[in-house]
Length: 527
Image (cartoon, rainbow, N blue to C red; front, side):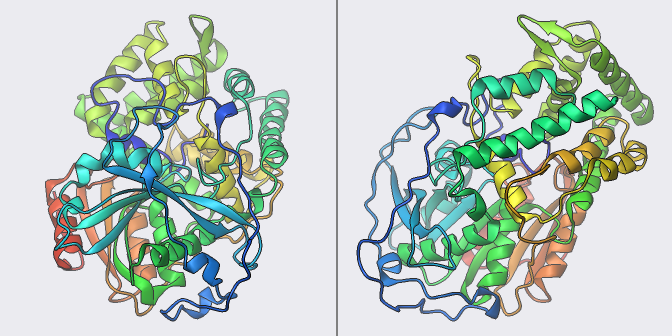
C-alpha cells in the first residue's frame, strides 16, 4: 500500500495506456508463491576466487568453486503466475547463491534467471542484465513482456532478467494470504485521524512484518540490496562475462549503484534510468516523493487548463469525503487510501492522464469503480481477489536495507510540512515513514546506501524532470555520488517514471552507449 519506488512495471509495459486493467504484472495468489528453497553444499569448496580484484568494500570470504564454476541448465520456461508462457526463444535457469555471503560455504538459495540469446552471434558483446525496480519486481516475468522495447539491444546482447533474492522464484518472501491483504486494504486508514485509527494502522503494519518472519524466517534477514549486488557478481561469472553490463530502472538504479560501489573494476556498461537518490534517508525519500508526485499532479492539472492549487484542493476534498464515506463498488469499498493509490498510478506516465480525468470525474459523481480498478492494478490484485507477493518482497528488501525506524510521533510531526508540499499526498507519505517498517523483525543494514565507485567505467544516469516517484534531483545526486568521470548525467525534459522507450532522444543515447560504447557529454539534455 506504499507508493514508494514501485511502479517501473507500469512505465515499462504501458499496460494502462489503453485502459484500466486489473491484476498488475504478477497478480497471482499469495498462497501459490514459491517458498525459499534452501540447500546445503554437497561438494567440498575450494579457495577459488574471482579473477577481477574487488574493491575494499567488497572484501568477504572467497566464493567456492562449487558456486563460481556452476554450469547452468537452460530449459524452456514455465508460465508465470500471470500472463502467457514465454516463447521458446526464452530459456530459464537457476544459479545457486549463498544465503549469507559472509558464509559462502553454507546454505544456498536459488537465483532465478531468464535469457534470450543475442540475435547477432558474431557481433555479440555479452550478457545485459535488467532490473525493473520495485524493489520486488520479477525480471523473469517482466523481461519477456517488455522485450520488444529492447529488440535493438537484443541483437548484440543476451537479454537476461532475474528475480532478486527474496523475490518470486528466488526464495520469494511471503507475508500474508489474500484474505489478510484484502482485509487490511478495506479497513486500515492510511492517514489516521484518531487514536484508534493510529493504533490500528501501526498494529496492521506490525502484523505484516510478523507474517514475513513467520512464513519466510530463513531468508528475511538476507534480503538486502548489498546481498543481491553480490549475487549479480556471481551471476556475471557464471554467465562468463568479464564485466557486468546492466540496465537498472527505479530501484534498479540503487542496486546498480551498490554493485558499482562494491565492484568498480567489474563495471562494464551500466545505465540507470529513473534514479533513486542514494543520499536520502527514509524521511528524505518520503519528502522527495511528496514533492515529485505533487509536481506531476500540477503538470497534469495544467494540461487540463485547471489551476494546480485549485485542482489539488478539489482532489483533496474528494479524498476527505472518501475518508468519511467510502464509495460502494459491488461488494467492496473505495476508501481514501485506495483512491489515493489509484490517482498515483496514473501519474507514472503522461499517456495515462486522460484516464485520471475519467477516474476523478467518476468518483466525484459517486462512481468509484475506475479508481478502485487502478488501485487493484497497483496492488497486484486480480479480478478473483488474488494478490501477487511483490509488495511483500518490496517491504522485506526495503526494511532489510534501512536501519531507520521512525516512530508515530516523528511521522505526525512531519504532517504539517508534508501537507504544505502536497495537500493530496503529504499526509499519506508522512505516515508511511512510520508504518512501512514498524516493529520490523529484522534490523536494517544502514541509513543510506553507498554509491561511490572510484575507477569504474562511465555510468549513464538518466533523470526525467517530471518523474513523480524518483524525482529528477535524485539523478543529480547519483551522478555526483558515483564520482567524477564515472556518473554521466543525462537530463530528460518530460513526464513519467523512466525515459527509455518514451523519449526517442534518450533511447538513441542509451542504445549508442550500450552498442557502441559512446559516452555522451555530461549534462546532455533531451526534450
